[in-house]
Length: 182
Image 1 (spheres, one colour):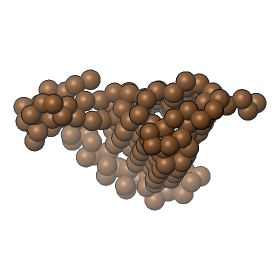
Image 2 (cartoon, rainbow, N blue to C red; image 1 turned 135 degrees about the horizontal axis):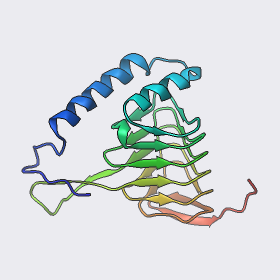
Image 3 (cartoon, rainbow, N blue to C red; image 1 turned 135 degrees about the vertical axis):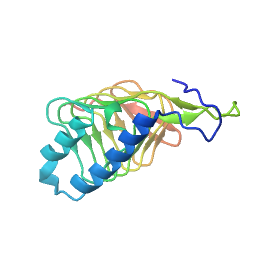
């Protein structure tokens, strides 16, 4: 989705959205970021209050960063790890048992570099069921990772990947099929 902006300095967000984003930042800092790991239900409750779509019992680490919670969908046992960044300018959906390891960056936003306004462009990221994304990987806007796939640590995923694959590198390439029994 491309947002209309008058200049590179104007916000693509309405005043109401900007106020909610600031409120979210402070609520997370004051009510969630200091909580111990077992307080996951509390963090999930707060995320739900801010519009995150949560199914079953997902896990969100207290040091995970979620930019705009109402653009996040997490299914049962999906996990956002320690210092993972869900840059939810657009939608991110994590299916059941998907694991986003520490310091992974899920980036849904970029800019229209061919326009003087540098309009914000967002595209949904979908992480399939039982996917494991290794530490410090970077997932680009619009990427879909198929179920049961593994993404190596520090990989940069620029294109969608099919189910049951192992991918790694910069840019990430399919190394082999994943045939492990689950």
